[in-house]
Amino acid sequence: MAMKEFVDTATAQFFARLETTGNLLPHTIEEELTALLPPGARVEIIPPRKKKLVILVTKEYHCLGDLLVRHFFGELHADILAVVGNYSTLAPFTEKFGIPFHEVSHQGISREEFEARLLQAIKAYDPDYLVLAKFMRILSPSFVEQYQERIINIHHSFLPAFVGANPYKQAFERGVKLIGATAHIVNNDLDEGPIITQQIIPVKHDDGVTDMVEAGHEIEKAVLADALKLVLEDRIFVSGNKTIVFT
Picture 1 (cartoon, rainbow, N blue to C red):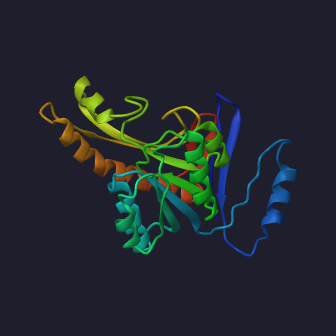
Picture 2 (picture 1 turned 180 degrees about the horizontal axis):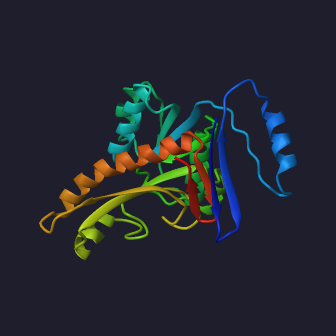
């Protein structure tokens, strides 16, 4: 048995994560804990199981490639059920791993129609989480609501710096000495959802945009993998626009 806890004095909230083994009935534990805790306390019992993932992509392969390799060798501890892309660029690569790829193009249709088709492709798999592995489309609030707190994004910047498109170009023009990547839960504010994990690496004054992009690809893969491990092991609590992460 292992337990970790945290008191957020700013919000007067108590968080705890208890991990146990044995022949305990989930509904019995939930009833007993609910009876002990103050009214309104939230108790959730999560039996251990492999989570189901659908990955959304555009054209960049590095994050998808890392996840597919981890999945192939059993290191991801989740089932990747499908990859959905708004271009077909990554279809041949995905299918080499025996995973279905669905192209849902955004071209020539409205945002509403695109997201309706996207949801149709995703819902066929009933995933626990969506992973945006360099999916370069902004999702509407109505789409996000369908998977509240279940969409994980990797952003190629140490947020909140350099949100939106071309963050490496923004960083180069600003002359930064550190670049980073951020994995976060998607909400209705662009690149401002609750942060799960971040990492940074140094850059030099003579590093160009291309150098930053290449270095950034490596850190993006690492940050996304770290974040997914935490999510898949149910170690994340969302509190407002922050996360409590029990490692």
